[in-house]
Length: 315
Ligand code: GFB
Image (cartoon, rainbow, N blue to C red; front, top):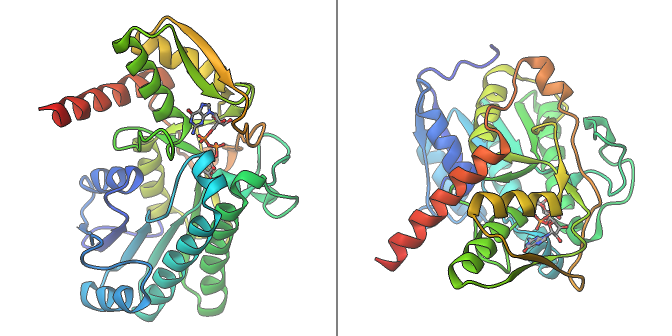
């Protein structure tokens, strides 16, 4: 262990999001105090508010799960928001962490930081070796800048600031809005609504041939806490499941879990994005961490969460 969480004050930035809330749940079984700050306490895009919050809250460690995130269409159509907001949030938090002597900082990126046509499975060393996928280059550039910020503070000031790159995540607390969500919640919702309405088909975007790797948010949170406690190094670490499947196969699996037996139709006016982004899991596995939640089980649990949320909304 390189960092003992016992008795530490850990700020989970972005605690209301899918990943942040999973990290808060996971940290409950550690001997640390979890600190959170809603937007009413600190707007993370405003440097003065971040500085004031950090000076007051005095965290020992930070998990940086706050970000502007979204699926392929949101990334492709709102580039200014994805680049600007993520740059501001991460720059404000890293600088304030350093100014307040925060001991440990864990930055979260995304598998889209890698070149569009990177060799598969993608090793950490592939970063900045080729052109990015155009639909998400804005978000990717912001996340690459975040990795570099953590590395720069480590290099110049000797800070123990590290980065993790999660693959495509899903789970309870995900965004199910069809215009801004990722593929998993979108397909769960489309299959469910088609089943309920008796529709004969659902429409998925693109050709269905791109491959994606999925990891449950609770597995991701477990990996992040593992890295917080055991990893201290310059290079970012991939956090994935080590397996991928085509979007068509994912859709068939979701339909099976949901119980929708109709047709799958493709909307070819929507982008496919990168053809494949399976990350190498070797580094994290070598450190002794592996995922626990199988894809089918995770989809079933996420679907139950979605059903409960829908029921609560209707009540
Ligand atoms: O999950 P997703 O939006 O993001 O889309 P990316 C993955 C694949 O699923 C693409 C297809 O090939 C989509 O065309 N797809 C099929 C759908 N049906 C749907 C649908 O109804 N909704 C959505 N959203 N997709 C994002 C990046 O890339 O992944 C971000 O834009 C980030 O920057 C994130 O890295 C993890 O995997 O293509």
